[in-house]
Image (cartoon, rainbow, N blue to C red; front, side, top):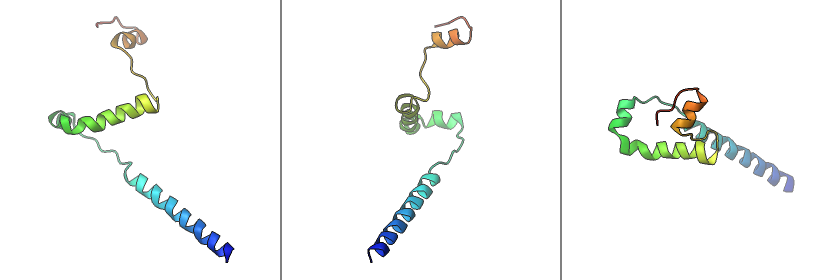
Length: 81
């Protein structure tokens, strides 16, 4: 009886993990939006863009923000700040 209960619990957990993965995959859709549309609807796009920026720069530290002068130095160009 205890083994059956454990097996059932493991099966339910596996189904829950599968379901969560399916939900996550549904939301990993990339769609290209024209810059003009984003410009027209800036206030609607700003929260999502700031969330993405914070995620990659501050949370995940996947990239770091640099100044124009630093970018110009990296690419061997004269800074025009």
